[in-house]
Image (cartoon, rainbow, N blue to C red; front, side, top):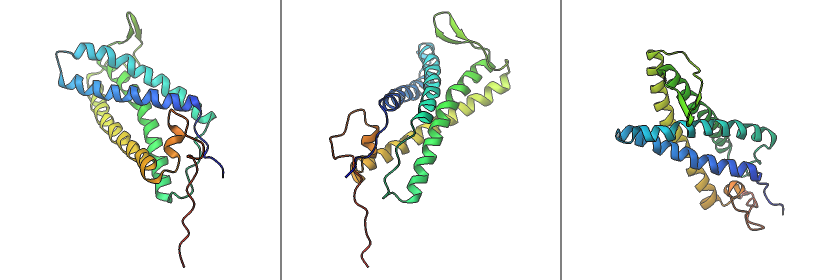
Length: 192
């Protein structure tokens, strides 16, 4: 019996680091809307974290091209394979779009993006109040979409870990699975 191939150590490290950063960003975003008293402190965290996520997703995409994901188990129906592929495309697209839209939104508002101290990013759009309003709305809508996509991704991961027990979750887990646990379950043969 052969063990299921797993993701590389770099792939797993990037996955879990970005998961923590994105969840922190979503909660910081919610707190920014809910608390005007802490707004400036939260913005000073939100902006550099967003740029860090943008840099990490570019690295992660390059890593994914060099080290593709292991194949899904053969027992999964076609719709689940398509759903898995669509959710990964959506996650990568949203991880790229959210910080870029945030950067463009602040550029259109005329606000600099402070990374650290006096280090600022240059604007990527000219100052325009109408564009700022549209991008702010898009940033909010995409944040909800990202949260929904992450929730679906988490539900699928738990399904693989707790119900199928087919090694898919373990292939991305930060720990190494015990020998023999990453094996695909035998195919179900219909009874004639």
